[in-house]
Image (cartoon, rainbow, N blue to C red):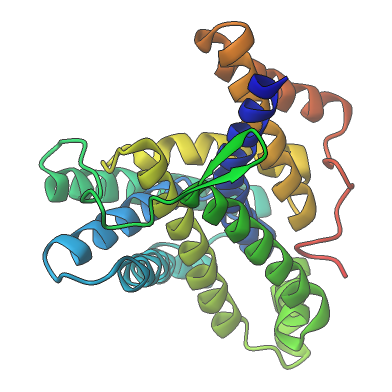
Length: 300
């Protein structure tokens, strides 16, 4: 029983990273209609910047993490304005063609950002310096909870709750929902769609960056490929949870993390991804709108 509970805790901590990344990914899709393949690169760059902020600038971990989150948001805004804004302004009116163009553009930026990240890391797997982040271990009965796992769970709760409140209880959230429904109608209603899109891109990039920093600590792997794993599982969390539902994405991320850890513990580590994507396919076929059927990103 102790092993089961320990692995459940490990799975929830891992799933918190998937849920965090999924919130950022889903935010972009729901507001801008973009399946952004470059989203994983934001996580990689955030972790790289945070690591170098500690190593080169000597910043304490909280400030370095903030620098990494800001970097993730800045890269996201840069990609949006250089790659997606011209498509929105001059792109085709056909919605499917516009989505395909945005997807191809995001793949191009993903490749470029990953290549640049590889140069930054020397094509190696790096790690945060030992002792640069909290390493306290809390004991909860028979269970041991490392401090950074607790931070991951807390981050999911704060970001998920905060984003749900922002989306459903504020004027900014109402503007985001309006842009997600119909940017032209939102503009006619007095919403500055470009400001909302830029703010959304920066917010989503920062959230993905936070997931990347925490994943870099969890895996002791800071490299150009860090964001790729988060991207795949974060996308699965969005589909299972509902592309327009923050609560569903957070819960689905936890579910995927627990399923992955339990598969590795009780079956085989080679099956951990297979079960996760079997769940993804099952939801696509049986419940394509996700756990709650929508209501978090683009609906009040």
